[in-house]
Length: 92
Image 1 (cartoon, helix red, strand yellow):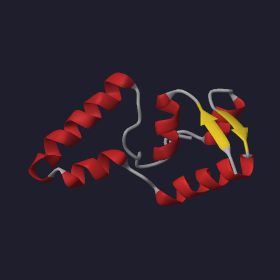
Image 2 (cartoon, helix red, strand yellow):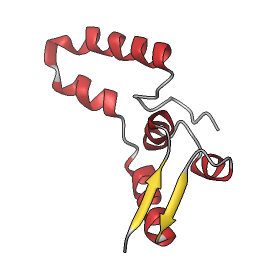
Image 3 (cartoon, one colour):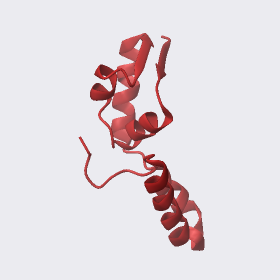
Image 4 (cartoon, rainbow, N blue to C red):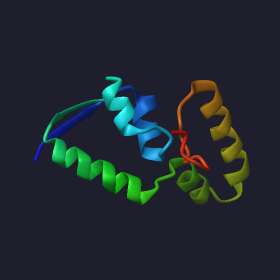
């Protein structure tokens, strides 16, 4: 099973965090899936079920630096428009 998923980094990170809808990105051609689409769909479902939050994981591992790191991550998200944490509610 080989599959290739390509798109802008912001879109891929948004997918990981549940901030963007994969179907909408696919049909708007912001996301390209090639090869075994069944494998790509299985990966998407697994990532959705995992409810990943990269910023939360990094903050949890940073001990006493968690609070300033969380503020820095929020600033980077706002400035760069990249989703680095899971939103409270999905945007879509």
